[in-house]
Image 1 (tube, rainbow, N blue to C red):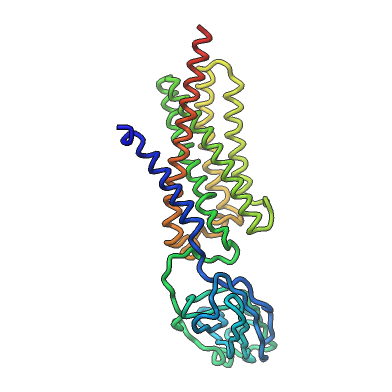
Image 2: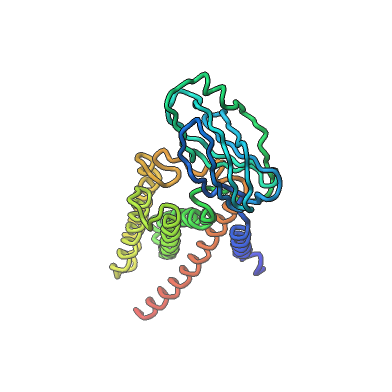
Length: 353
């Protein structure tokens, strides 16, 4: 009987253990960390030093390419392997570039039959003195499907800005999902209280808000750490970050409001109404306003949310359980907080008598 009642708690523990083990121990796919130098004039032979990440250049056959546009490729004449994570690629740059521009950005591609294909987007900048579109198009290979190697292994995607911090997706984003789920349920109990005047619903609503605030603070902390590693600053003047902080202040005001009112019934009525309007205010602050202006944060201001290269199937196998696991953990903590509030309320009522 005990196991039937508390099955969801065991599920939450198992999910969190799974997220910690798989989320932290699964390696990233091989990628390109950096290439130097990265700016060249055409009509010369150049040597590009490439540093890889989680790569095995000494194993298998390795080819490197420059790609511009949708289909123009230039293959390196020579590839010198230095070690597993470093190589030199020699390119003979034609006199003219494809297209009608004097300056183009090229993606750098490393193809290996052991590691698969790695791409560093728009890293190489090429310039030409004069434009000859026909000769430029003929000098570069046109190939929409060059037969790059694809290695099917369970690994997380390698992203050039995120690197290992992509694992923070399982914590930062999941904490915010769990926080909003608790805030929505707290509003449900606030409405139930306003309809029935049952103080038990008020205690449940308050416990959920307090736990949601804990998760919100943890979400801000993990986001700040993430920003420090990706944007090189703890905080930016980004509208999504500022609106998230403002949302936390709105709910901090909820806690201050409850602590400032001594009469329990009056406290429950006012804080219940405040809780409803707080959620109504927070939703546009976090989900609407950031989409109307420029933002560094994914999913806002024309900056797309995690796409197929970021949130791929390997990440989803950990991210979705993390959302469910953190949500269960949050409701579990809120339940403990609710029980504590019931004990305090019972003691206060006993003292009043």
